[in-house]
Image (cartoon, rainbow, N blue to C red):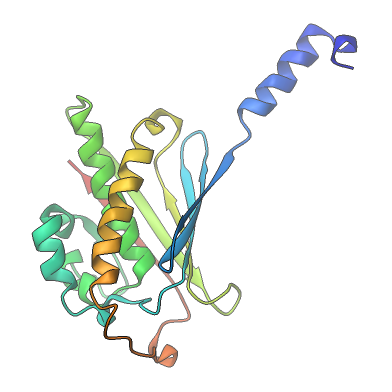
Amino acid sequence: MNQNLSPAAKASRMDWKLFQPTVQQYFVENLFSLAIIQKQTRTKIIMDVLHHQINTKEIPSVADLLKKNLPSVLATTCYNDLNLPFDEEVRNTEIGHLFEHILLEYLCQNRLAKGAKRATFSGRTKWNWTRDPFGRFHIHLTCGKKDADILPIALEQTVGLMKILLAYNKDSFSLLNTNSLNQNGLKNGERRC
Ligand SMILES: [Zn+2]
């Protein structure tokens, strides 16, 4: 069938294929799943938290653990309803928003490690549990095809740190009071380094 297409039509079909975003699935047993859609200039991640900890207030040691494992993430810029700096916000924030900030930090670090003099990445985390399944986050990042080399590394590092943070309380299982959680919201982050 392809033989009947003009060269231009063949080329446009190839371009179309090239620009189809691919979805990569990442599953971390018992903790969360990620669907990663990398587009030309941005990346979207749909995160489904499978764990009982959906907010960092369930992890009292979160700030100490970050200080120990990735202190620079506490200095990332955060735009939230109460205008809290991230090192305060982090004590009571949604897991998806924490994931976003850690990923922004690792993206910056990897960009610098590849020789860039400076790097800026920003992100946005949205959720709406009246519409979506409980625990789903939509994370948008200014990380496009040109960052395709560092995204897998940064994701791997982020998942590694999230495992440390979330597994910390695994023996003291507590039922969530979902009424105290914001059913929907939007928070932004940015990292310049
Ligand atoms: Zn933020």
